[in-house]
Length: 123
Length: 232
Image (cartoon, rainbow over all chains, first blue to last red):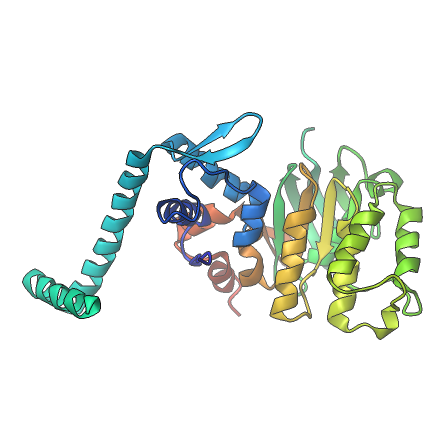
């Protein structure tokens, strides 16, 4: 997964989203040790201070925790990860709905298109 | 004074031209700062004053509390716009050169980075491409364990892949608590790695802020804002 950062929004908020995504999708599994700030900053080509801020925020939210001697770890609280995953899912759906309503679709039409497409996909 | 770099009403005139006009700046430790501005806005003049290559005509500047001079050169690692290395030199000559000049130069680190680029001890500068030469110089500068890195146009004149390499080298190698100031007009390429930006216009500070502050307040990238502020 590559780090996708848009140019018109604060980098810090985008890093939070991207880190959450990586935790929810299992790239950083529950209980695993996170790479160092500098390595993450390097991977995302961002400023280490900005990466640090995003990580601190995830610590406040409980998704990460720091052990004084051995580094920073992903939470083992599966419920919390699932909650975050649901939050991200809702955001994706909102983006999708916004795009569909920009195209002029009503909610009922959107639902039927969605159902049809899901059927085609699963074949 | 807790700030690493501080200047008050710093001015420099060349005859009737005011290259810098009453610049006030305070820059702390552990920051990556972009010094941005169009051509002839005073970026290089500022960096040269920091390195004691020019003397101000007014105001004052302090680096770690001292006037630019021998003492500050010990803690400032400077990448000039143009190369001062001689073409006949071999990589080992340049490394020895840096080791003689700077007590904070980490020779092994330099060799490691050069090795990862496939550059050997016996290679001569003369045989290197422009992009490779720029990388070599940046490696030398970043191999010092300095408190302040002053990089004048580190990404000018190299291709996008080399640019990524250079930015990567900067992020991975500046020592903790050190500050990096880099001048450029290629903003889109570097804004992600900056903490703060300083816009210079006609020798004056036109705007300062953190990158995320600017993005939040203007809803635009620093690059777009720059294009707006400096629209011709």
